[in-house]
Structure formats: structure tokens, C-alpha cells
Image 1: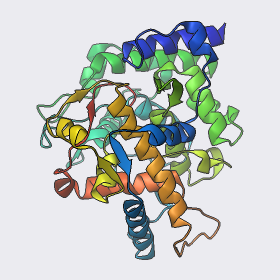
Image 2: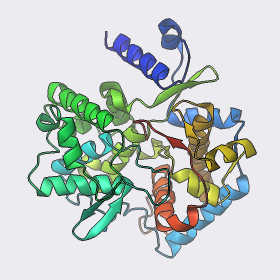
Image 3: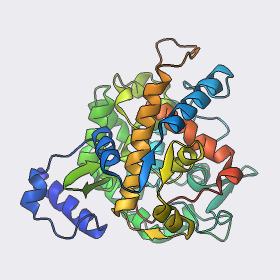
Image 4: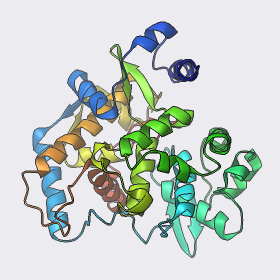
Length: 369
């Protein structure tokens, strides 16, 4: 019964997001689901609009190695204290992170100076960090936004007030955010005693198992599609939720995952900007012109999946290239994995936003990233 409901939901999602026109449920059920790493490798092998440049891969690896040597980037300290994120490694922070990543999607504006933003303690944040600031603002105001009992019945008015913008650009897709919160709250209350920490415990310190639990139980995290007859997955929000918990706990306690290296890069719309900047990704003339015109892609369009898939595979190649670099890690048991590389590239884009604004990025309004 659960499997049938899962496949029916996937089919509705695929049709809704234009992944496919018509796929019989029986055919979909028989399709092997590729994990994000397998999906990315396959997509990169058939991509027509995106090319991975080996020289650019080496360039990124060199930049990361140098940043680590100069201590500009510390892989073991991925949660930056200058951001409005929870610092306590406890269950309340896990529930905070779950809400944040349930809503971690679609913050871009058509123009670079038009962003959803939130002011907190005298500092203005934009994009995802604005969402985090709004969550912190709500908690400080005594609003139980991290309680599943509260957001299982949250109203559209609640969401508009809690995530009110400090600029003229309001947070996009309010109805979808309401739907995600209600659905996730209901599932937590019915299956995990009201706390995502209980879901984490069920993973038995396995990132792969936690990823499976998330994508099996929480429909809004099922970031999947069909390309060239293959059923592929990206799982951006699900993977970043696992990575966030790992980073928050520094790989200890509830954040200890023995297979954290199984996670891939989190396929979004910003990290590709950094990859293009470093020459690791190259776009066809046709695709670049579409991006430059602010073309609105649909979730599931071929070009969109090529950008995401090639980005993930590029990071996998960067990880392999880093093995050839001499990196003086303080913790010699630590390997530079895809999650760390993703964070470096995402943070690089934020630090040099003005410079990278010249590189167009793909624009999609959806709940997956």
C-alpha cells in the first residue's frame, strides 16, 4: 500500500512538473531509481547543453586546496557563526533545521538586486539566510514555529507574518510553503512522535538510511524525475538536511553518520554559477542565451536537469581530483567530501556575489530547490 501511494505521488509530481507527458504507473514502478550520484553520472553522459571541462575541475580543486592551506576554508567548521543558525547541538536545533529545510527552496529574484530579505539584530540577510533569520526572529518572539503541533495546522496568514520580508520582495510560493509545513507536521506527529530527532535516531548513524527515511516518509522531499527513459533523483533538500545536521553536530552525537561521504553536492541554482566561474561547467550557446534572457524553466525540463546533473557530477570529479592534492587537514581522518565542496562553492558565490552576477543562472519556481 505504501509503495503504491509513493508511486502514485511520484507520477502526479512528474506530470505536474512536466518531467513526462504520460507514463503508465506500471511502467514507472518497473523503472530502476538511480540514486543522486548515479543519476548525475548518467545525465552528464547524455547532456547536450552542458559540458564538464577537465581543466576547470582541476582549477576548482586547486582553489579549494589553497583555501584549506591558507585556512580560508575549514572543512570541519561548515556552520558559520555569523549566520542566523542554531549553534546548540541538541534536539531543538534538529527540529529547527527540519523546518528550515522543509522551506529551503526558491529564493531567487528576476534581478540581482531584488531579493527576499530579513533584518535581524541590525543585520540584513537575503535568500536562504533570510529564511533562517525569520525562523530565529519567530523563535525569539515566542512563536513555536519549530513545533510540529503548531505548523501541522499553520495558516497562510501565519506564514506571511512569520516570514515577512524587510524589502518589497516577499518570500515566493507561500501556498507551497504552507502545504509543506502542514504535511511535514502531520507526518511527524503521526509517525515520529512530533520530532525529527526521532527520525534521525532510526537511521542508526547512516546518512544513506536517513536520506531514505526522509524521501520515503516526506513527499515534498522527493526530488525525482525521468530523463531519457531513466528514473533519476537529485534529493537536494533531503541531502542538505542530512548535511546540515552533520555539520551542526560536527559529526558527533546525533550528527554522526558513518557514511556521510555518500552524499552528493546539493543540486541548486547558485552553485552552478561558481562552477561556470571556475570553468568547470560550460553551457551551449543556445542554453546560455536562454539563461541570459531570464528564461523561466520548468522543473523537469531537459536543460534544467542537465545543469543540475552535470553540477553534481562535476563536484564528484572535483572530489576525485582533490585526492591528488596535498591538503594539510587538522583532522587527518577527515576526507574532503562532496558536502564540503558544495559548501565551499555555495559560500564562494555569496562572498563574490557582485562579481559572479555576470554569470546567468537557471530560474525555476519549484519546491525542490
